[in-house]
Length: 326
Image 1: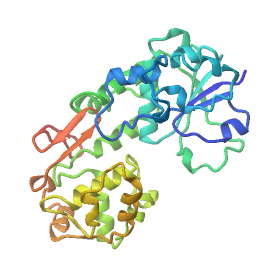
Image 2: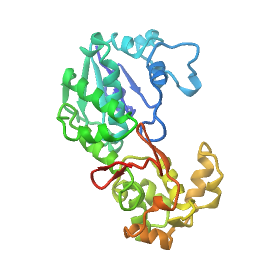
Image 3: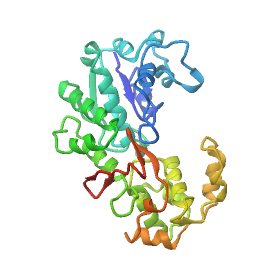
Image 4: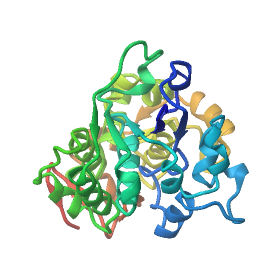
């Protein structure tokens, strides 16, 4: 029997190459931006389907698969129970931070279901799957999921959801070899904490650097992966960060379209158009922040989430590169 594949990036090659009976792209939650889902929300998403689930919003795990499989009759069960219809369940989660966060979430969930654990196999996808046009004969290494993988995932998941980044920082001093793609993700996440000298995270500072070098259009800032170098956020999250740099009491960036001040964040079409017509430059204050001569957070409000930590001016955990308490 072909396996069930759980993944963070749905590619037709899984089905076209007969790699899987069914592929589930568990993409409902965004763990890198905004407040973390509550335990009840997470449990409801992976649990049995009830009348409270909304198919239009894909609030149940089963809404994220095609279900051409003969096992589709079991799709109203919990994910753990559904997995028990298969001899093998493969987890394909690549190097992207969002994918690794989904992996540790799922492994923490499966830890309570020993009958499912015995079926789990972890694929070590040490590249960005979105860069692949076709799988061809490429098959990443596969390992059994043992207590060591589960323990490491649970520790990381609980640490990331904690109300301070301390537990995540402490993980860097521990053995994370069971999940070899996790440590670089934790480091990249910690680097998105506000710098002790500038009050901005790595992605914000990189945008200032690029704008200073003449990259005045948002297309380069948002989409040129090799150019921007940071990898935590996607296009819309970069846009929200740019809004913060441009629309505070003392902006670091000029030229961002003024309509973005009032456009609803759910209005993606008009926001996209407004970003495209913006032509950016640094203010004198922005140049001083880039030179580490000014602290952005001393002149502008900070209010965003880092995992389970709400970063505000009064609760500004920083990175220097070591954790600095407020």
